[in-house]
Image (cartoon, rainbow, N blue to C red; front, side):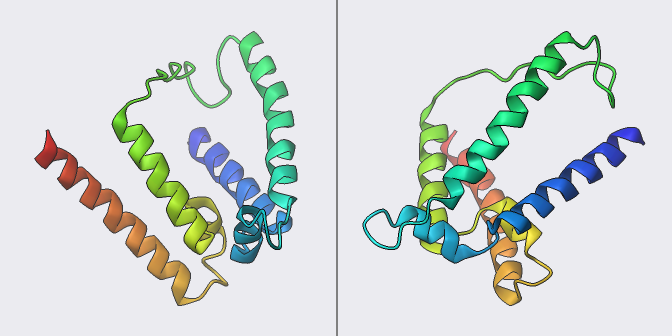
Amino acid sequence: MMHYLFSFFAGGLFGLGLLISGMTDTNKIQNWLDIFGRWDPTLAFVLTGAIIPMFFAWQISKRMKKPCAAEVFPANPSIKINPSLVFGSILFGVGWALIGLCPGPVIASISFGGWQGILFIISMVSGIFLAKIVKRQVN
């Protein structure tokens, strides 16, 4: 039960941070990527503002014997760069550049984003299922 409470709190804090920083505004994201036009450096400040507290959180977690909401820490993910990772990253980046949305901000803005946010989520979930089907066919 405690795990769900921590997850709810962390997700709410993340969404609030996205909202306050303006990262739910697609124009801000597209202007970040428009380096020869109306470039907006706000995203760099938001990313830096996220990295600094996480650095300290990781240092603290290294000293902890067990996490607050679980019995053990999860295993570190393997760092394996493969064609699927590269291709998926390119697709994500192109989609992000074209419409200025990624999953976190679109979920945070779903209450005021109108039908476009709902369409994005439907498309995203459809893409996830389609990718699984294609991967099975390729393998």
